[in-house]
Length: 219
Length: 261
Image 1 (cartoon, each protein chain N blue to C red):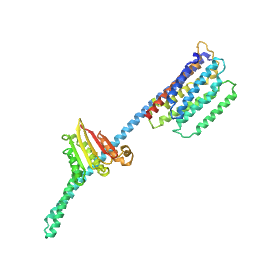
Image 2: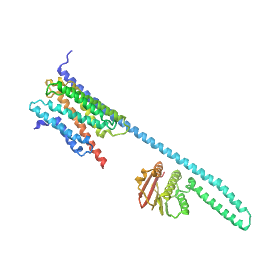
Image 3: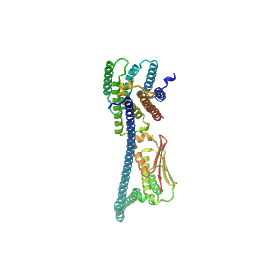
Image 4: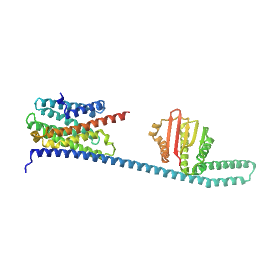
């Protein structure tokens, strides 16, 4: 049982608990959906660990989860950009491109392989979206205290995670064959531990900021 | 030259480290830029306020000069002409029927001269507050009581005037005139209470009426509230405060506090 408590799962479970506490009663559906998303993240991670412990390839779980991940992050960006560009066609175009890339890659790789190129492509798009968001808030005349602005911290987490994972994504196939010698864990595993801590740390903080913001508005 | 697998792993680790540092610096830069933006917005707001205050000050100065000019003209020109008319009328010798009419005309002229002088004094605020603010307010209330049936109570708890504050007292007197004018026009009151206090470096003027009252927040949102908003701005111009308390059906209390030198 203790084997299921890794750095990744612990950081994800903490983030889920924070999300439940802070966002469960949030009136905004985009924010509230983080609770469901974090629950699915934890479920996927624990399922992946279970299969790994039973020497079964777990790529299929992460491959399936990729669609949920892309939908969640994309819809949140849609929510962020809607204030500046109130058009919805770009999100449909992006999701269509993603699905085409995803299906094409799955059709060209063996069963139980992870669609790495689609993941890399998705990461690049999310990094560009994060940078564009920064551009929008610097151009925006409205002043916001960014230190406690939840949207800003959600994007910070996304940028850390997807930009930081670029090197691992590019060398994905090489790292799969990496022979662990002196190190007890692979470089990919260490990197994703750090990235997960950064992502879910930023998100947990964003959820707390959102909770405080919501309460200060209503009081 | 071939790169060994160990070196490649170190390279990937290094790239990842750099790729993590880049967002960190970007976030720091955005935060610093945002702080700069906040400072800029604050400075802009302060400049806007200063400009508004200067504009208001100029408006008051211009208004005061115009009133003084009209007051001088009323007193010196029209007053003199009426005096001459009065002298001329009194010098006319006529039969008993016409003499009565001339006497009436002369009395009316004298009353007009008196009214004109009082009006001229009311307009010339600088002249009025030469004695002290309480005296100017008393003079204004005397004028009001002549033509109306208000029950007026005035308590002046101030000491002698401090000359350095003459400018402030003049603005306060004009505020009082406007408050009074608002009561006459809108309040439908029967009683007005005025208290002038001076304690611990602050002069406070409180005007209370028993009129119909209003909802302050609602009033400030409408164009009718412009007058109230101007009163507040003028009080702020002297680093003072203006507090409006009003209950519909019960009356209104306006309190102006201005710090003294």
